[in-house]
Amino acid sequence: MSLPAATLTDQNGKPADFRSAVRHLQELNVTDMLAVNSTILDNMQSSVALIPQMAEHLIAAGGKRLRPLLTLSAARGLGYSEDKHVLLAAAVELIHAATLLHDDVIDESHLRRGAKTANVIWGNKESVLVGDFIFSRAFELMVKTEHLKVLDILSHASGVIAEGEVMQLGTQKNIAATKDMYLCVIKAKTAALFAAATRAGAVIAGASETQEQALYDYGQHLGIAYQMVDDALDYEGTEAALGKSVGDDFREGKMTLPVVYAIEAATDQERSFWSRTISDGNIQDGDFDQACALMKRHDCVSRTLMEARQHAEKAISRLETLPGTGHFDALIDLADMSVGRGY
Image (cartoon, rainbow, N blue to C red; front, side):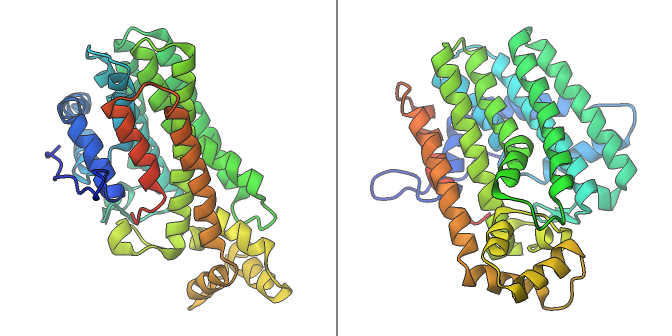
């Protein structure tokens, strides 16, 4: 992992945008993150050549490394001075990496972080099997912490993430899917790992039940907000900024919150459009532009971002109950800036 670039701040000394908020977290945890990266590389070694090759591809693709940063910052924010949080943070990142490999197969994705996905380069079967290998390594790292509770937290989160993916398949192409159904999906497939990351960091640091719950709630609300922004960006982002194709959710028939809002507000003619494109998967030239225009007409993306802002504020309010530290201040800034991100 290269050293983070300098953080840009506003006139009040706070990170100027989401990218700067991430950089600030990286700066605070730079030594720990170097140890996390080294731990990941050490645990991706195998006599089967494809495994380290694919692992290297994942690591070289970069990424924000938010989840391990959450674990490190939760532990350090509570004054933790040992090193087992590094093992936990590496395990969290490996769980995330394994789910990415599996997700790209399920979604038939071609781009991630601006590079070809592993399933495009090596194939679907290879991606699934290497994803399974990475999961196994994550569990080995959890065991090395010699802490049963964090093993329980992260193993439970892994199961919940899988449940979320199955739930999403159940709502896909279903224009009757509701906001509540959507929330159930994203709480499981995204927010569960954010919440487990912060909670595990708190537990390894010897947090009280109140501190543990506050950090869990922070992670969950941040994860919900983060996924909502992701879903909004699929209709208003750019491929250059996102590092992946825009409109993928639309083409896959995913019932994300912007689509739920658009269908709720649709005229009979508009509902026929959503039925043809989402339910039937009959997508024609210009349909994605039409979908974006309908969302703009009904303020679907802005409503999604307003909902994300509410969850970001809930995340902030939970951390504000804890004693102020540099790490917790950085986590507050991260949540604050997360809704305005463009990638």
